[in-house]
Image (cartoon, rainbow, N blue to C red; front, top):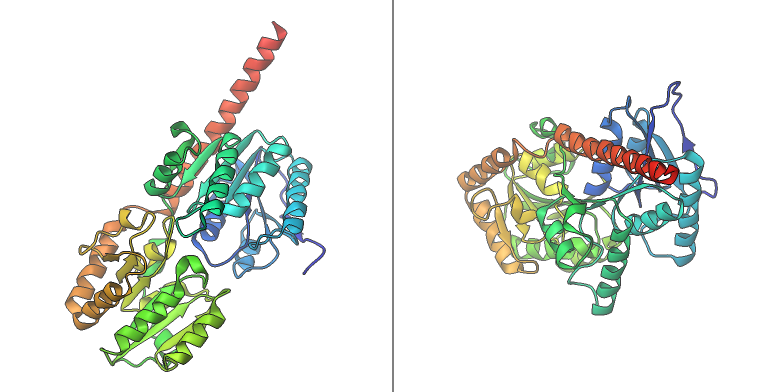
Length: 407
């Protein structure tokens, strides 16, 4: 572990007035991380001066360093796993960072960073605190007491949060149903993706992994963690390969469950059928090589991986969870199944493998259905409006209090 955090600061002469700090736990290859970096990169630098506070490791660290005008602070204490000692150090580290750099807006992403970051922002005296929900910290898969404790923490955090941004209507609905914040605190801002990145066709990926022209390829892009249920993807591969010969499966990602997945692949004798690529930075190229995109998640916000697969015109089979049903209409631009409904999921994959016309039709429908939405410019514009409105509201309130004090 690096005991001396690194602080990257661009050489800017005229610093914009509004300083905004993004806090995210770790720069993994996930939707929350991609959105935070997109925001930091595309903000109007004439109005905003962005900072990023994050963990010292992660596949997207080089991307963060490459963002022009972004000050990145890599913390040795902030990390994804719960660690009371390190979390406490991270809490005080964030407080110090906010005070030292006179941050105007604190915007947190991801559950753990959202809780630690918002409490630290309040303790540091930050006037504007914003949090984006990329899926809540609680879910139905948790033990009852843990779920209730997470809801309690989210309710406390909501009291000190100026705006809660949800990436789907589903997350907003769940938050309000659990009495987390009030209706007026919520804004729904759809994720942004660069649609132009997902229009190519890269045969090099198939050559790299030894996939022949006669093979059909089924893939999933996800972290190897319990939320994504990657073991279910292996189970589906077992079911499908028993009935369909010319098919291979590819899993893009990595994480804590890699050993378990490798053991399953070995036990099911699928070493020649299932490919684990590890972390990859060429997701558009990999998606272009797929015939079918699968997601086996148990719970979600609105996964960017599904949006990217749809933008790539791939037939999608996903679990009906979180905001996925807001973009995938079952039988029209993809297929939806219940989490853990593995036989149904395998049957859907088999139906697509057997029918090239169905695959192409669902894929084209998927691309068309999101073509006019989920754009990066719209996502950036919506955030900047919230930032500017929050600043203006804060200044107005300050002036009113000042006038009241003089009276």
